[in-house]
Image 1 (cartoon, rainbow, N blue to C red):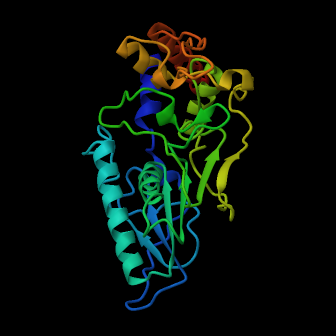
Image 2: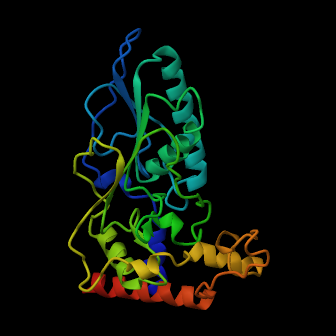
Image 3: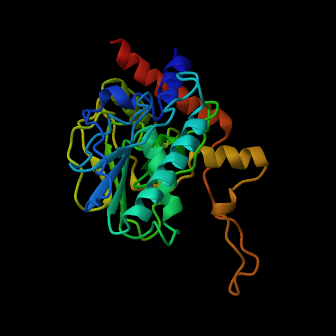
Length: 308
């Protein structure tokens, strides 16, 4: 039961975005030859192949991105294949629009799996001279949300256990303003480290099953990372304390273990003039057995609450 519960949660990473979204607007492309002040390119979650269910899309001209929106075995292609098609389609269509309407402000907005697509393209545009100006990116329920206060998108907290779905966290570094919107009970975008905070991890799993991956709130006007507080689904669940927020994530630990060394390269100290022979800082050890135990605890807690 424990394995099935955690597997179900992880298979739904960036998934189940379509039916819980509240936005069902049809695309309203700009008339031929006209150039609006702003256009939004919308990218939907898993199952939303025509991107019709992206929450919070502003009124005005809208271009929906068609892509497989699939995560095998839920769909016919893998998550990475869907992301690749989506990123190519978004990048190509937005560039074409920019060529035709160079003064139009472009907003790329994605939900769930579509947020991964938008995040990947936005990171690419940050260093692009054509696309990095008069552009913004908005992600909702983002599985690749960057780390903040001990949480991040779930893809940054668990190893790639779903075949064909392995992506890096979004960087959000560059001139393009980025808005991330997330619910505090949504494990998809607000996942803690399951090793150091298994109860909060379980709370996020339950929140996902209870509909906290759905979004009806308006998108803030100013860019930033917004986490909307929700009453925890599990009594006693709390955010990770500051003292534990700097601990390495599960993927970082497992990568280091697999490569046969610890700490991971990012946690080592480079030689300096003052310290030509530095020693690596002390980093708490988290062997695979502890990681597996944490997953079992989180899954068990979630499963018990769901069964009640």
